[in-house]
Length: 271
Image (tube, rainbow, N blue to C red; front, side, top):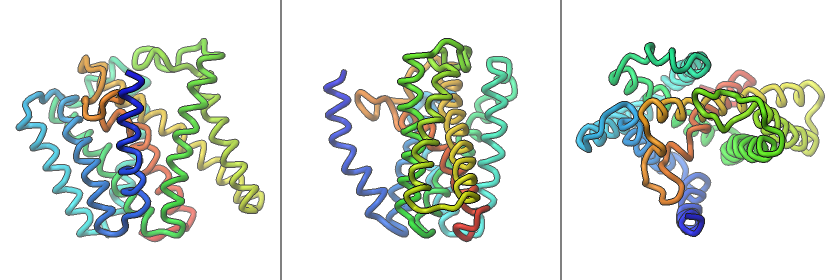
């Protein structure tokens, strides 16, 4: 399994890095759209649709909606706003699981939820490419999420006792959450000192980083919640040794729209 994971990572890493950081404009939107559409194909299975025709159809719907959003950039703020509202609602659903599953709206509702997860994430990445420090913004949100994951793993392994969401993901602990959050905040503090942020900007940066990390945890738990309800371990086997696309980007789907919304509020970019 470890060998398979390493081989897959070695093959995908240069493709992912090239797509994220070397492409621009329509090519970048298309590349991210392909990844998100594959996520849509996986999500249809979580929504209860096992037939390939239905899953491909849903992926095509996601792709068509992404094309429409690219053609009408004025919709970007609305897409981000809907995304933020969804992740706030998802927090309540995770906290209330399994009882909250009655509010999902059945298979049709779960398909709609998939759009709320996928479309704002794509929109946020497209916006990052248009704003100052474009690639650095993409790298920043990834580092925040990855650092939180690594910090949570080690702190949870060393100190984890109190379960964070036992009905959704029994392996996660409050101690892990705190450790992951502290790891990301330390990195943010280091960046702020290096870039010479004043006290107010540094405080805002730390608060923003905390919100991004916390909502990224909700993204992770949300996919875990739907997988648990569906009795599925991985969203697919597209990435040998790593599961599916959604398994790799679940935290980012929540972190990206939050990061984009916070940057916009701070006046970083225009919508």
